[in-house]
Length: 369
Image (cartoon, rainbow, N blue to C red):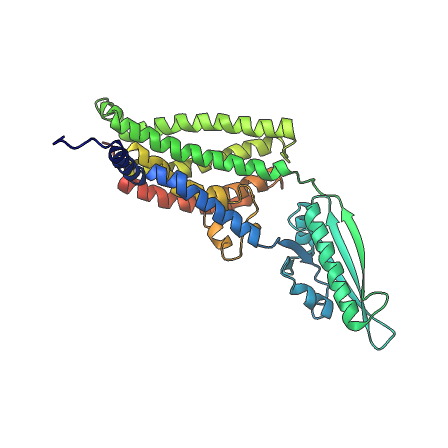
C-alpha cells in the first residue's frame, strides 16, 4: 500500500502482540498457566521445609521436672501431650492418633547421685511405623547426648517397649475420605456454577417462570438431581475402596450410611459456593478461575493428601478455617475410628456455620436472569 512492501514479519509481530494481550486478559489462562504452578510450588515448598510432627502422649505419673523430660520437651519433632487422662491416651493410642505413650521413671543411682531413667514406651499396631522409628531415634539421640555430658556408663536411660493391639491404619484409610470430600466439593461448586449460568444464558430459567412452579422448587429440583448423582458417585468410591483396597468401615453398613449423610451435608454447603460463583461470573470462561479461588486452596491445604500437621505452625490455623477440612475430618473419624454423627458434632457445627454464611451471600448475589 502506497508503494510500501508488505512486511510479513511486522504482521506476525502484530498478531503475536494481540494474541498475547488476549491471553493475559483471559482469567482462565492466567490461573491455569501461572496461578496453579505457583500455588503448588508454595505448598510443596512449605511441606519440604517443615519438620515431621510426632504426637506422643506422656503418662501423668511422669515427673515433668526431670532433666530427661525437660530435654525431650525441647525437641521440635515431638509434640508431647500431657493434658489427657489415661483412658483418653489409651483410646488415642489404639486409634493411631498418638504414636506412643511414654512413662519416664527416674531411679537415683548409687554413684554421685546420678539418675538413671527407665523409659516405658507403649505403642500400638495402629501407630505409624515411620513415626515410631523417628521417636526411637529421638530418644536414643537424647540418651547419647546425656551420656556424653554426664559420662554415665553404660547409659543414662534404658527403654522398655510394649505394643498393644490397635486397628491397622492403611494408606487408603487416609486417602479415600480426602478424595471423597474433594470430589464432592468440586462437583458441587463447578456443577452448580456452570448449570445455573448456562440456564440463565439459554433462557431456560425464564421459560420456567412461565410455568406455575415456584422459583424455590426450581432450585430444589436442580439441586436434588445433582445430589442424587453425587451420592451414586460416593457409593461407588466408598464401595470400591472397601472391597478392592480394604478401606476400613468400622461399623459396616452403619458407617457407610453415616458417610453418605455427611456427603449430603457437605454437598449442601458446597453448592452454596456454586450459586455464588454462577452469579459473579461475567462469562463462562470466568467460572473456572472463580471456582478455583475457593476449591484449589482446600485441595492442597485441607488434609486431602497430607496431614495438616505437615504444614508450618503458622499455616495450620488457615487450614482449619476451611470447610473441607472439617468434612474430611468427620469422614475419617466416622470411617476409621468408628465414631457416630453425634460424636463429630463440632465438625458438623463448623460446616453449618459455613453454610449459613455462604447461603446468606448467595441470596444477596444470585441472579435469575
